[in-house]
Amino acid sequence: MNNDGNTTEPRLGRGTARTGVWFVGARGSVATTAVAGCAAVTAGMHPPTGMVTETAPFTGTGLPSLASLVFGGYDTVSCPLPKRAEHLTEAGVLPHGLAGAVRTDLAAADREIRPGGPLAGDTRTDEELIAAFATDLESFRERHALARVVVVNVSSTEPLPGPDAVRLPPSSLYAAAAVRTGCPYVNFTPSTGLRTAALTDAVAASGLPHAGRDGKTGQTLLRSVLAPMFVQRALSVRAWSGTNLLGGGDGAALADPAAAAAKNAGKERVLADTLGHSPEGEVHIDDVPALGDWKTAWDHIAFDGFLGSRMVLQTIWQGCDSALAAPLVLDLARLVARAHEAGISGPLPELGFYFKDPDGGPAGLSEQFTALLSFAGRLRETR
Ligand SMILES: NC(=O)c1ccc[n+]([C@@H]2O[C@H](COP(=O)([O-])OP(=O)(O)OC[C@H]3O[C@@H](n4cnc5c(N)ncnc54)[C@H](O)[C@@H]3O)[C@@H](O)[C@H]2O)c1
Image 1: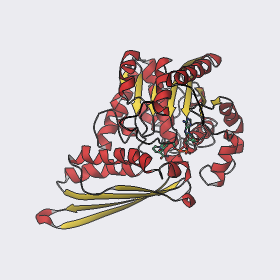
Image 2 (image 1 turned 135 degrees about the vertical axis):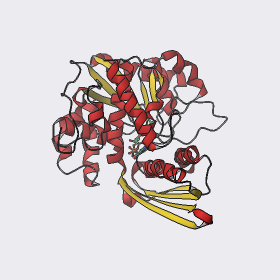
Image 3 (image 1 turned 60 degrees about the horizontal axis):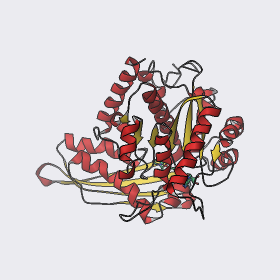
């Protein structure tokens, strides 16, 4: 047990078997922070703050150790990972000196990043793209003799596909390749991924565990704590409005109203699921490049008390998005890899704790945490 009350399992917990983590969006802020952070924690340079899987309830669950994770993935940009980590240091996301200290790990992951697609002017059909991605995944698994590879989508948020779309969105092409090659899958973004009718049969037949969608790291995390409080105290929420200011790649992607719509649908779902109705109010996302990876989220909650007395709660969340997301991404990769090893298949509602738009399960954070702990118990029993 370290100073933060976290436990650390032996470095290579389960024999010498190694687990691949294949990031879609591998040169982005979240993926780069996850690779750098995994190396830093493994080397004992930093405690695993923010990693739920490193806390006591997960001891003995057989999760792959952080040292056993091998990283690779796709990105449509070419900035080398060590350089990307330097940019994140300049932006204050990574601590000074870390990028240099874990340079070997970043360079190793960088060698396993492929261009993905579809790239500008790409003439390949959906089937050709899926086949090419499947070949990349198989090659990664074989070259590193990996026990399994978890595909984790941390790519830029896509616009919601239109009703007449004839092509699959990129997130679904990558997800289809994961299913075809027997890779468990995590969607940390609001993009479609596996949630398309085109993949329903293949996903069901694959028997693979999968989890999504859209990581719950800030504003929605707070909403999933506060909304049950209003319900439990029999207070009537009249309106819940929110504004987010952020920069970075995510801020730029979400400046597109169609991408923001995909994000906001998940943010609003938690209120409808918890309160039993959708209160008045909207969520807005503003791209403020000067803020970089730091997000400010302001919520204004108008509610009624006894005899209709009108009250307001306002909250301001200021967080570093990648530092919040990266430990959760590592948690999810380990949990879904272990579920695969244990023969657990299908959607994992027990991981709803991590998502804005989960695959079923309770909506409040407290109940979601209880479900996660039961899942840890189930993993422990299957060892
Ligand atoms: N940081 C958080 O707190 C948080 C929370 C929930 C969800 N997310 C989601 O995680 C994702 C990543 O966030 P980020 O801050 O790292 O964004 P980012 O912009 O830094 O990284 C996204 C990466 O995806 C790459 N990309 C775009 N299209 C691609 C494609 N077709 N194939 C492969 N790669 C592609 C981009 O080049 C970029 O490097 C976003 O969708 C975001 O909404 C983040």
